[in-house]
Length: 529
Image (cartoon, rainbow, N blue to C red; front, top):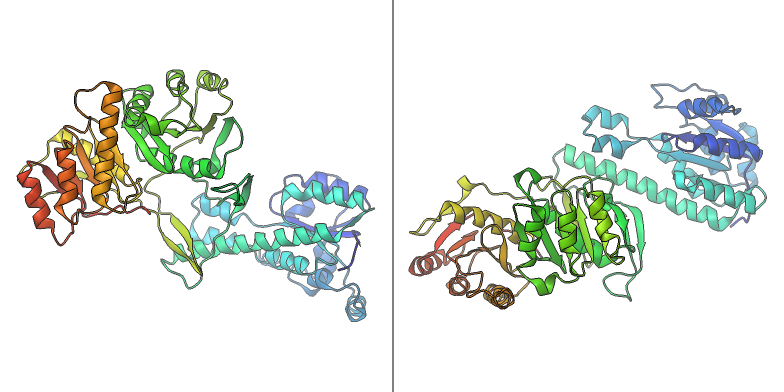
């Protein structure tokens, strides 16, 4: 690769004008000729800079509402020509093509346009064509051309030029080229994904995903694994959009667990009342509603105080001082909430190892999103589980019908079970979980583990009977046999909510009738692996 590449001429065409005037002034001060187009040229001239229009180079004016301006041999020849190839140099001279040593381009704001909910035609108009073509040309020819696609690289560009006497070094140009190809790939991924949705294609022939680096992590799930955190640009409230008020950087496991906690608590609308979810290792160890946020936290904490230690706390309303003081009584890794009062933030200030995140809002649990999981040789894509049930959809299958209070607890337990790793069993009473069994190969074992945890908490809380007595129980999938259901009945559950659909439903229903249980079928499963 050619070593240093002097920067004598730069082509600038940007949609995001942030830092444009300062960059133009810095390049001009270093003796760089500026070529530009449309709004970029106007902004540079407004900053008092001399700018040559690209139209003067191509011999053609911008046309078709700006759709055609840089798609011309005079531009692409200047970007693609090999400066050490005599035939290329001869062609440039014969056709009066000026070499372009630096390309600064950021693209039409397609992703932002889609995120704002713009109509189809507006989104189409915000698909950049000339920009990606120039970026790819310059990136391919990075042996001679530097290409900058991110505003955050302006300072690095100037620093590299100053370090090398107005030239750029090959290592820096290669890094810029990688970023350029990644940018156009991400842009095309956004366009293709949007068009798949717009055309109603749930399984397009080719699928692309992209993200922007948000944080390089110390390590992954374990110290020997490298990891990084990328954001997808959708703006969905959560860890990716949150403001961190204090504490050290989040780890891979912190981010994963905090996301699980916030997605769960977002199921409970703030206007319906306070809710709290406590997560450990991506599973809920306590979820509750309450009269106040502090009450909701205390009730969630009382489901499994042991597991809550070192966990993640998610809240569906603005964090207040009383709740912060309750949370601060034990070690907590992360607290995430839509907002936080200043005095609540002050309470946590003394807890240097606690991270406080505010998101500005809750995630929409009904939003149609895609999830992706890698497998050997490929990846699985599916709709996010945004399934909801309404009371009218529930089918009572036992002789005994549930009371209104039981139905409310059933819906609460069912919502929590949706966020518990399968096989999932959730006992709940009075709007709070009282036992959670997660991730077992046998549904019976999940029922037993949840009940055993409740027994331990009864001892801790000084209760005469475990809190599962009089509870309802939710199962994320059907009971294939009556044994799991009978374990729940033995733990004191009085009502059951489950999908139904087993070949042995009649035997399970008969067992529920014999045990005096009320049971409803949802017709919807919530596996979570």
